[in-house]
Amino acid sequence: MKKIVTGSLLAVLGLSMTCLAQAQVKPDTLVKQRQAAMTLQGKYFGPLGGMAQGKVPYDANVVARNAGYLEALSKMPWDGFAASTKDLKSAALPAVFTDTAKFKQAQEQFEGEIAKLVSVTKSSDEAAGKAQIGAVGKTCGGCHESFRQKQ
Amino acid sequence: MKKIVTGSLLAVLGLSMTCLAQAQVKPDTLVKQRQAAMTLQGKYFGPLGGMAQGKVPYDANVVARNAGYLEALSKMPWDGFAASTKDLKSAALPAVFTDTAKFKQAQEQFEGEIAKLVSVTKSSDEAAGKAQIGAVGKTCGGCHESFRQKQ
Image (cartoon, rainbow over all chains, first blue to last red; front, side):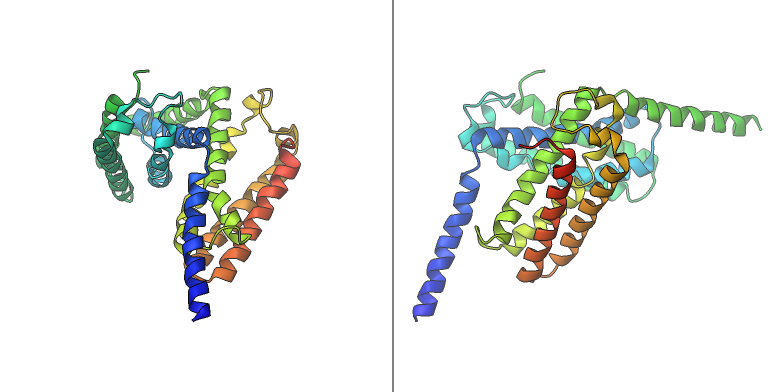
């Protein structure tokens, strides 16, 4: 019985410690981390946009590699938009913190299109790849339109 | 024949255009991108370090998720250490640009230990996970020791 109580207590404490660890991330660190994720999305999506527009030659290997990176990166920014960051200086519009359902939906659309890009780029079908890069780009733009200051 | 020549020419031009596209990334953008990758490595490795040290409870799901993110992130900083960035202000020591073979070896050791972490965390073996987190941490520290200003 003592063991069970201790175990439960530790589980409760453990849970609290985990929550505490996350809550303890400073708001300015959260902003820095989410901006880092956006910076890297730009690094790996930018060249694909150029390929889709025919500005640089389509390279199926680069597209597939970047799509894989973007799949991970597409999931990284969102926990950085914690309520604790709402008064910090950044390009995030107030809607991020007031229209959270729409913001969440925009995140999911982006992640969904990236997942499709990963799938599409497993073949070397250039036309399909370019079309899907365009679809991803629309979700970037759609989210920025509603949730990021004009740049 | 004409088609082949044109094709070859385009291939050559294409290659040049791709190289040009990469060469055109401004040095300060390269620094920002590589620092972004390091920031996110910190975001996703930090909690694992805490778990390995017993400061926070071991959560196999978080470890496996972060290991997957880190596998992508472990490959992202290195092209940002281009020669064009060597005179820019950053924490990179001159050795990054003079002892490139050792720097490359340190990158590969880090990527290798991260790959092992991904493999190890496919099971929920806590002891093995903690040991491999420690092995990753050593490669972080080893590289920072030789190639990053003391912080």
